[in-house]
Amino acid sequence: MPSILIVDDETIFRKGIRLMITDMQSEWVVIDEATDGAEALDKIEELQPDLIITDIKMPRIDGIQLQYIVKERYPHISCVVMSGYNDFQYARESLRLGAKDYLMKPFQREELYALLAKLQEEWLTEKRPNTSSGMDQQVQNQMRQHVLAGLLTGNVHHGEEELLENVGIQFPHAYISCLIAKLDRDSVTDERYYQLNPSLFSIYIQQFIQESLDVSFKGYVFIHHETEVVALINHEDVASINADMERLTNRIRKEIRVQSNFTLTFGLGSPAKDLESISKSYKEAGLALLYRLVIGGDRLLSNEIVAEMKMEKHDWHAADWHSLNQFVQEGDLPNVQQQASLYVTKLCQQWKDPEIIHQQICKMLLHFYELAVNLAIVKQWLQNTDVKQVLVDIYSYSSSKELIERCQKLLGDLTVCIGNRQKKMVTSPVEIVVRYVEEHYAESITLNTMAEIVYLSPSYLSSLFKSKQGQSFIDFLTEKRIEKAKSLLLYSDEKIQVISDSTGFTNIRHFNRVFKTITNRTPSEFREGKSSTGIEPFRVN
Image (tube, rainbow, N blue to C red; front, side, top):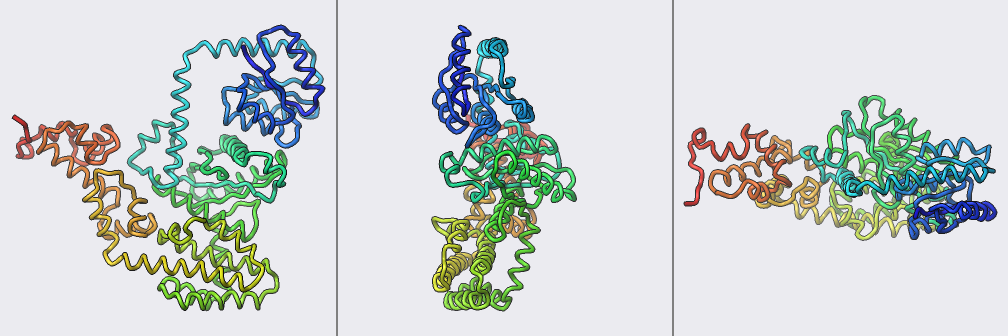
């Protein structure tokens, strides 16, 4: 029997609708009521109703926000909205979100009955087909989430277009920009924030951005971390990207502020020309977003903003910056600690405004965070915390002594990490990568993996490798794998599937395609081509 959850902050309406449905003597059963969207979400998770009848204007989570979240989490649940005459524009928004219909308050019993009869017929029709295809779609959606996350970490490269196609991801245009959206925590009261699961804000933001993208842009929006929503946006014209993103984010921020009474800050990375560069765009967007702690939120922060901040940063005590930066990179711990103390002391003497002092120190630490990112030693430096928490903590210190000690500790730890890294880099990083590939070609190897081993950023290692070897890391790895595969094809009787697996290819189709691209023959043709190679293939008698 189909079930209904009624959501309205006025008891008289909830009880009245329940009584109407009971008197209807149909298959519909009212399984519970909720006073607002927040309470409704708890009951939806527990009871899994088939239909939600909800008012629009309610405290905490209203009807529009509730529909965004239900659409993301429970796409199989239908919604009907109730609205007063003055709320018609919200009812229209609900229909755009997929609501089955709306009821204008006050509505007649016959209107409700006719609507429920129509929905019951639809419900029975939907229950008849086999559900296996729905399960396949669910699996594809889960795989798409993993692949999108892999693009951010650099674990999906240009040789895996087929993987993207299999999960329904397409980037038809030349450029891909990474946009990160985060809730401005100070725009939400503690009571509202802690009464709800923070992930609900992210779900709402995700749906809101996706709806906005669908109007003008091709892209994919997903929740990467609990409080971080990422959009990968596909562009045709690189010249207009920044202006397009400015207009898009301004519109989203304005509409969310009006409809939901909170604000967002966006971080934008530079446009990527290929799949492997998406991780760089993601890192740039994340770094730009950090500057919210310095200049405030409710805006779009991009590389251009960061560049301006860097210029301001270097204008302040330029001599101190030059010396401090030099000592850190040289691994000179005593001078780093002395220079850090001098820098903070000068700040406190020059400025009487604690806000300015904190801002300048945050800018300085962001500079060294960028250095750590480029050297791929962030984890070794910050251990069990992250730079966001470090910057938040800076604002909690109220004495120059505390600030000096904290900066000395942070920069001292970074100096030690750089010193340790330099000791391990006696051998050329490219030589280490080449040797590793030759020994581990059969394993899963990515540019990110190599970058961590040689303590370099993936982008820098990629550039260094190509300049030293004359080919990209991916081409080198593929070439080594194909060389070994050719040898196994000629001198063993292993099945081609086994050879594909033992040389590091993810699947036989990918192996066949790459092999033919490089040798102009399929593996089977190569194995049987002894007349052209002059080599007798190995056979077991």
